[in-house]
Image 1 (cartoon, rainbow, N blue to C red):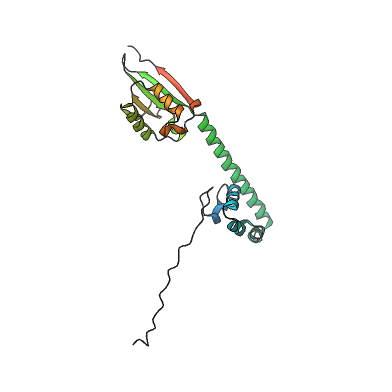
Image 2 (image 1 turned 30 degrees about the horizontal axis):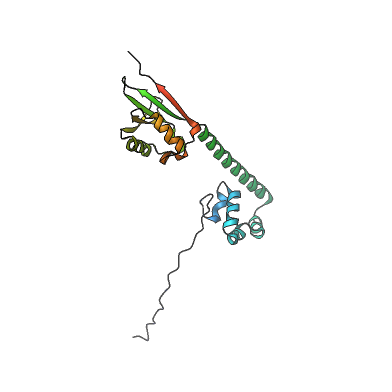
Length: 196
């Protein structure tokens, strides 16, 4: 019985394939050419892994890829790549300009003669999670704080009490969640209640 059945050698499991992901576009390095930042991806790969850079972007590798394309297709590919990179750079610049032009408005609103609330809006432009910020303010000042919509339809944080000065100081000192907010973009406003 043992002679007819051959004992099979134990099969070694295939080890998982290691994939290197680009730190610029987050694609696997062999797919960077389909992203919008190929030039920066190439620079990063050349520093991070010279062997893979030579495999994908050396003169021989590029000639082998291009050899299968016609001259018109090569020119079109180069134009498309340059256009894509320029578009991505312009988009990033526009986002940065918009962020730097955004303002954080801290409004002190009088409710009754001695009661005030503080409304803060514009923090979301600086990647601040409003719910977490409201909770942070509520704990810091031991008052109620919530995220609500203002009359313009934008989200804002409403903190009970006159804490506008303290919030400005916290932003200037870069406390906790507020560390990404530039102090030059803060506007303080005081709003009196309308008397009927």
